[in-house]
Length: 326
Image (tube, rainbow, N blue to C red; front, side):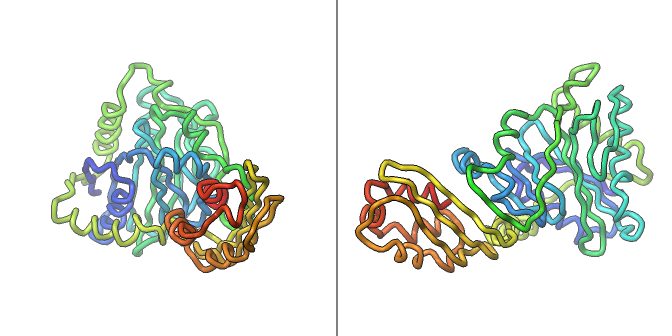
């Protein structure tokens, strides 16, 4: 098995590294990696139904869509992730537990009572610290999971919750669980980098024919290309959202405004605006300007910036309307 080492923390590139490894090697691979603060959503999820978008926008937190299924997860400096890539596609695809066994063994050696729970979780005393997901890709199985070590659980709770809106989506919703950090159960304190090194060495030491591979500068050129063309794009992360209907309502100085949106393939298929506001011009002009556009803040901003919003929504600002729509 190839044990891959690198220090990248860019979440778009880390997912590109996984794809790069699948294509580069015809051997099983293992990798421990860390992201800067971000949210990772499952392949079949609707980002808007999983995440507090107001909080995410205010704090400039990246959202990255995985190629695996499963639910939304929060990463910060107190979390890291592990990846297994297996060539044994027939045997391994339905066996989530098999991939987590080396992690469980390493944690039990530290006298932490870890259990595999449900279909894809690792728990301590019934509380979750690791969610796992996998998929078939490139004729192989990609399995990866999170490891909460010293994550800011309060911020996780702020991020992974639906915004103040009504949303009907056909996407897959995350299952909410009680969560804990591994660091709270260590008999002898470690920082996250010490723990990461311990875990890497334990899995390496207990794997036959293990060898280390360092990502090269040449590799990074290909990884950067995969990231820029796929994982860092709006189309991949939001254009792949399942079809959904969205209702937004806010009360402003000039009255209540409601927006009903039909979003398909990341685009505004239809929009209706109602409320008890006063207006000089028909709001259908605003609606028509948005139909067919990407449901993206910058795109909508550009479409509406030249409208005199006060003529359509008396005593309601342009910023208010942008806040309502997205």
